[in-house]
Length: 207
Image (cartoon, rainbow, N blue to C red; front, side):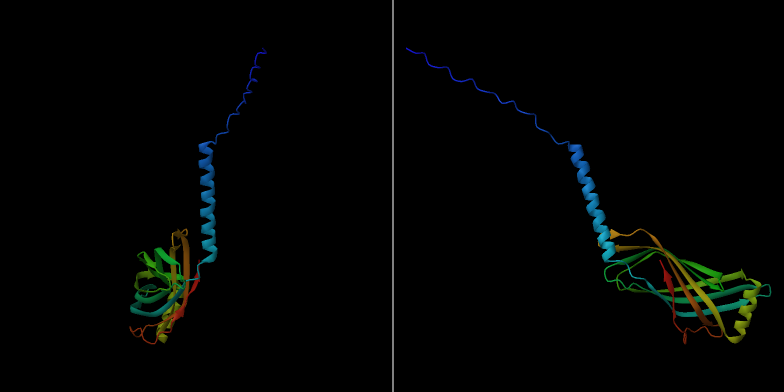
């Protein structure tokens, strides 16, 4: 009797160790991709909704208690009505600070700080303010020029606006930027306190 053949020996397959992913590396890659996506979204939003230039006008102006002393010092109360218009449909503007000043031939004679406010899309905001000049020294040229204009009943002034603003659309907010507006010439009747018959002045803005 022939003995049965033994079964062939089983060949054991050597298992290669699996390559496990590093969880820290996965987190880093995910954060980088997320940052790229967010940055791309912000870039697309900025390019798509690039803010239009804000529109500023001086709607009315008057002066009270106007006087120039013999020593070339001016005292007066300048009343201005300024309109700010946001032409954007989807972008709001946040005014973090604002300073309004008035001058004659680039020499400032009065200024005032305006409280922070928010301007929604397609919004018109009226700013009524009084700038008080109390015994402010004028240059010899400006004092002489203002006296000459006063005798004619109309003085030529300038209005300067400086503000720190930021733009917001949906969840995106821009960094703070400096807005500057120059309104000139602002012709003010010194013989009457009324705001009637004032010719509106369109301001030049720069951001």
